[in-house]
Length: 200
Image 1 (tube, rainbow, N blue to C red):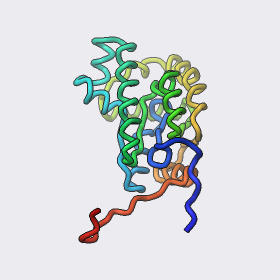
Image 2: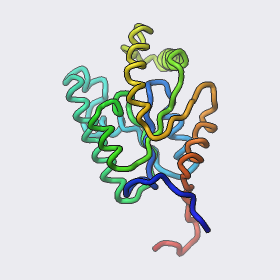
Image 3: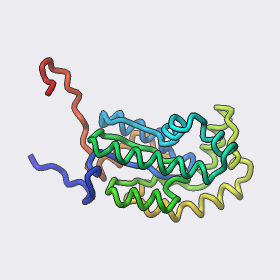
């Protein structure tokens, strides 16, 4: 049986996907749906940073500043890429500023792991973030001004466009977006082995 050709790249390319995009783009929601569909592991890089540092992202920013957070983010990303060489299939959602950092983007490019930019209009992103903040009661500094939100989005989008694949999210369902990513990258579902005696 012929296998669908995966993107030409390094060791980890066939077993990982990194989702990039602005806040509100749906990286976590789409990542979870895609991982569930493929029986892969989902991870949010911010969760790993918090676990490694023993602080929330907000606390790191508040207590140590953005440079310290970016350093922790880079170290966490390095750790993920190292683990991927072990063969665990994983969907990873990056924080909104992670792929904008040149060192991170270069490291991902060198690894050959597919990167997917989830794109949406700034109006849709603002609406999603505002609704989420209202529902969760979590205050996000960037939601204080749509002008600042728009400026940051415009600046970061230039970096996001360097990702290998761009997927428009618009008003589409999470499942439809996940299905398109799987199809475009030729991702394979992992069969869950339930038969007795199938262990190696």
